[in-house]
Image 1 (cartoon, helix red, strand yellow):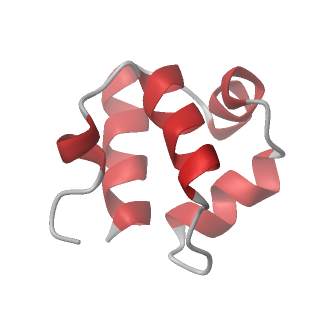
Image 2 (cartoon, one colour; image 1 turned 180 degrees about the vertical axis):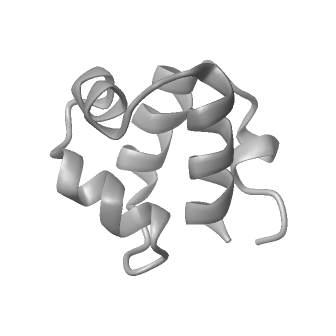
Length: 64
């Protein structure tokens, strides 16, 4: 569910996976894996993504 929310918010904000990865200081392939629901981020990475997307925590974790 996290990956689905991540992808939705990222596309709403108009970011590419690479742009989001740069803002969150992670590798773009990790973003790909997260959006495909292949991985679950650590709390630290999730917070970086939340800040990079400038979204509410509950929006990113909805349905979890």
